[in-house]
Image 1 (tube, helix red, strand yellow):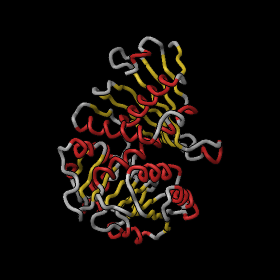
Image 2 (cartoon, rainbow, N blue to C red):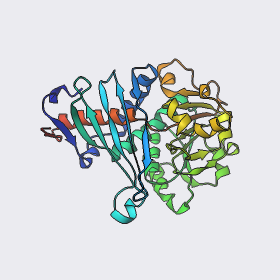
Image 3 (cartoon, helix red, strand yellow):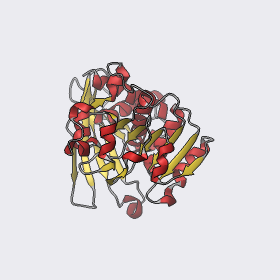
Length: 330
């Protein structure tokens, strides 16, 4: 990877260039390939470091890994600064991706990670929809209407034909954020209460909740859920009993059972680690995924470092091809 700049120092792709380079389709392809490589043991993630730093109410950490297939080694550094938008006019999630040469350990690239994080997170849920949702799914629900929710819905609507979008948010005044995405796609939008989620064939949850919002009786047989908000010990979006009823898949099993949605069902003894399966195994065809149209399937998207590395590596390639990358000696 990056043979064209093997001896050219460090390639820098600033945040300001990402939107003009990386598409949702390219992110989807990179993430799908990464999940497949993980399930084939050709790629692995390093343990996550995520800590409250005791300043600005911030959570800061590192996610990294190595993909032998793509020869991608590196990490994403960053986290969540909840006061950024109000105090500094910046988005609350801030991150940067660093890529290294796996042959030498030399730093190869530094890439703005904010938009890439949004794109890879949205890609992950859409990969799960492609491989786990019923083929006749027509109604998609969004639980959450913040910044990331727009990316989630845009990507999902690009990869599957739906007839209707429904949505719920703790603060209903934010629902126009996702209503506009639905309207732009030519689809009707309806705000619902939580029991109204039973109409959905696909549900994406993308909140920062520390208490279950979507309960087992809010979900109809045959529904696919992509739970994308839980990535820290204590966070929780759905009822643990829902995982007990569902066929559960994830990006990284170790993360799912420790910092993902499965942590709560595991703690209550409702499921075991053996009940949580890699989405990559479904992509590779080594796990059947959905067995019947009545199965509830649930993807626990915890967010893995390899996703960040895959999209960052791709954006560096595009930046070099288009001549917008900056190269510096280091």
